Image 1 (tube, rainbow over the protein chains, first blue to last red):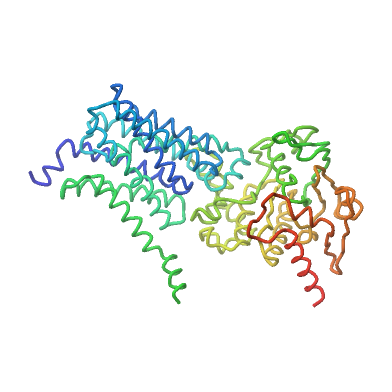
Image 2: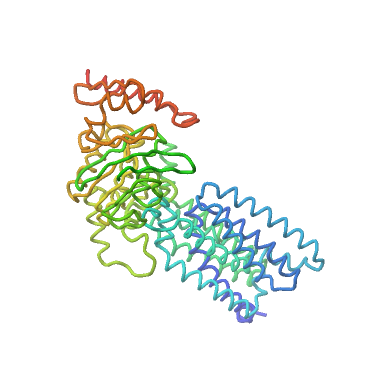
Length: 276
Length: 281
């Protein structure tokens, strides 16, 4: 089978639509993850999702249902408990370990689980069905819509909570809104790169973008572009060269961050000054 | 405010506060750390409820999101955690609270004016974290004034600035007052840098609030009565006041104020020496 044949197969087509939608949502939400220093929360929500997926499979539901319930639950819990941002690390840590423990229990109760476990942990984009694509695309578009409508208040509450509160924004509501967006984005990203590698799409592109530009809108757009580029190229390499698509996406996204740091002019100048 | 008092978490912050803030005037809120100075701003912003007495802001009960009230927070995450530019941050002061897609056509012009007034045009396109403390405070003032509030609340705008930067910010506060005619309330821990522009002082200590002109409040009898022990005020030849007898009050505001840094007593001492040396040289 030639490359062009491979690329036109239905499972690659499904994967293409899914990664496109997910990368755009992950890039946009990722910008706020980096801005709010909530990478740990993003990490934790993914792990909580693992318990949800395992639990859903155990009682005979689709993993994505369990993912949605658990990720949203964890997001809201972290949003309520850590609204002040100061205590959020502790709240996140406790939520994370409690959920992982549950996940271990669910796996031990369900014997025929190894295969599904693997795809939740590391993603299985080439296995997504047309129905999955529809759901993933709808959720991603929903996230993008809400992010674009609440862009300014989210930004305001993220960079200056006290003034934002004084100007009438509810910091708790903004925190909850953000966590809900993060949870849904995590759920869809897990479809592609899995629980363990969800960081690659959510954090690395946004972190790279924030190094490269100091204008928020530009950084958000750039994060989406880097995520999309990593996802498309990762899918292409996975099909062309072989190896897991999630590996390629992770490697590319991480390289983009590394590259951004290396090319960051301020940093270069700073290092030069230090050496001089 | 009339006979105002605040209780937070079962603890009385202060009581029996009566004062008014007039348009075009500058009010300094002074007192030791944790005496409830920022709480006063939070009351006016509607973020904290008044426990007794009454407070009217432009004739209304205080409420959050009042477009007539501008606020500059003491510490802002934007300064250190983001690569955001000053222009973007000031822009958030204009339309940050608004949901939706639309862009206000007048934004560019309003921003330009706020940046020009605060003298920030030349560095507003640099990331905030690359600016000096004084430049950041100027940007923050632009953020707080960009929607033309009639009452401007500034929480410790002079904190952590060197004396030259303090003087610049004081001049800017005065300029904003003169240009906009807004009433300005400034929380500070030292009256001296502000003394030349202040019309009214609110001194908060020991759960009480004293208000009046500088001379009415910052004098030995009022402060001695407020603190319950003799306070002496030394007025330097240039009119600056050194307050003696509050070292204890400023030295232990919190159990562990600055683990590594100098204590307030040491800072006060240092400040006193600086003033002395400057004026004798």
